[in-house]
Image (cartoon, rainbow, N blue to C red; front, side, top):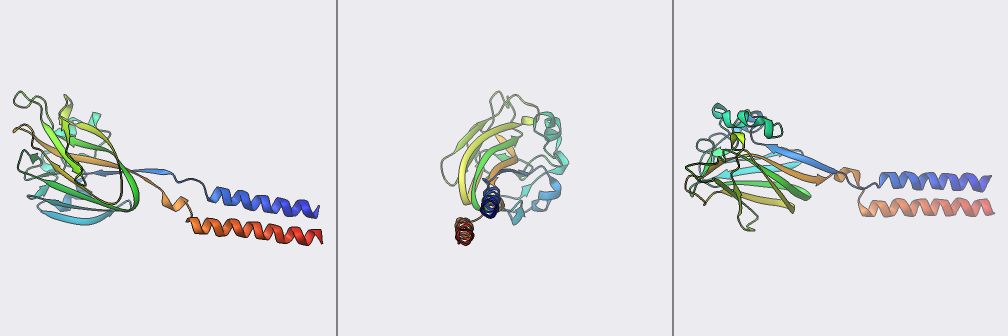
Length: 227
């Protein structure tokens, strides 16, 4: 009976350890630039931040004065049915009015997080088609890795959802601009990132110490029971 109790206690400890060491869970975080309450303070600024959102440090710089344009949010409101519940206090993040304009404006967003993460998607507004008989374009570049071009779609509010999937670590720089079609301009609506919840995973050295402790305690009481 004594041996059984010792084995039972040891197994319970190992089970608790295994539960404690469960895999990390993914967390989806959004930065909604149509949320005037969260981002309204950057209006009129050429640089802003860093501010902390869900553990991320996020900062901005631009070639002109930034705006979320709460007075001209019609495009966001009109397209809200297809935009996954954007806040729509404003009409997206832009420069001057509320748009990043062809061959003139550049907006830089810097994300900083102590770990790896993935940019799952970027959403745009004011990408209308046709605009002067042609599609409009937004472009963005992550850490200087080359321009990604996003073409307008026939959706209300000029809304476009752009999947990404870039895996990053630490600080990341995202530049937004447009060099295609002289009539092109757009607003940045939202960025989605996916992280792992690091609080659910003990550090490897701690895991090793815990496991070693369970083994040593089990051996100690086993030898005592044998004697």
